[in-house]
Length: 108
Image 1 (cartoon, rainbow, N blue to C red):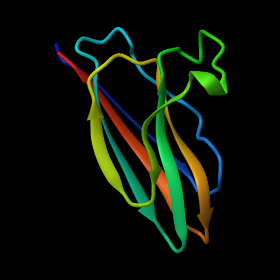
Image 2 (tube, rainbow, N blue to C red):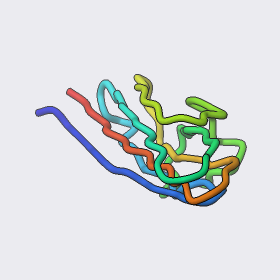
Image 3 (cartoon, rainbow, N blue to C red):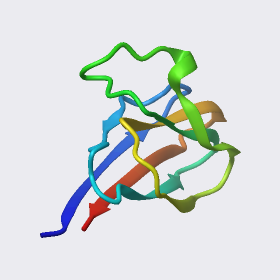
Image 4 (cartoon, one colour):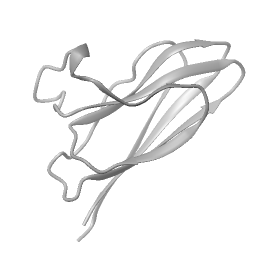
């Protein structure tokens, strides 16, 4: 039976979101993500992942790796390797713009 996990996080300030925990044992472990920017102003962001599960292991800033970095527009993509968590890291911005990361993890 195929597995499917959907979730999202939204942020309006320069900060990293709470991590979205992934099933790193899912096979094949494919993840589709969408980042939507909305509102007035702008945001610069990175979509990041770690192979560690933050609920089970200590995760430091050095454990996070960029999927995409320094983005200033809405975008989507996919990842086909196992990971412990994903997050949205807002690195700069102004005004009232918000950024939302939507994640769907699917397996066979």
